[in-house]
Image 1: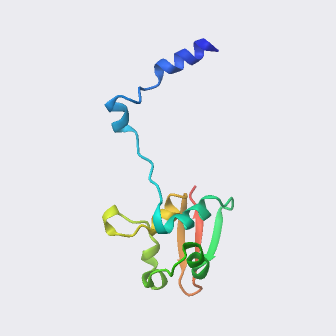
Image 2: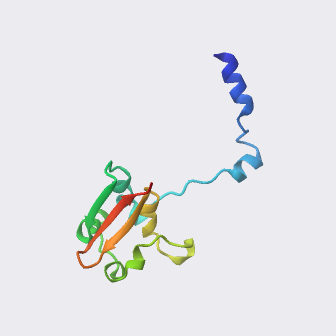
Image 3: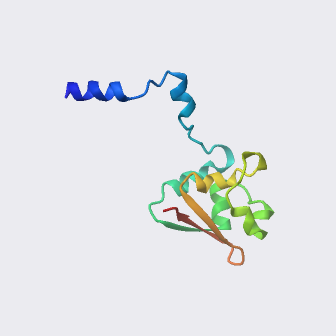
Length: 113
């Protein structure tokens, strides 16, 4: 057992070296207003979760922006961090896609495969 551990330790990169820290991806974290929705979706075992706009607002503790109710594109993942829409992190970082049904006022969050 000791030999195997020693051999693996010699293979593992030194985390203190600048090369190791520069190449390691930093995990993205959902914080702030959207964190409750992220936690909810992340801890659901079902591959498909359907929530009404009202249920989403209850989780968040505030009303969704008007754009969420009238524009399907609002539910697409943000393209750049500068576009000011952190909402999509709530489901994308939980490993899900969002498909809104604006007439039914609900969203299908489906686990990515």
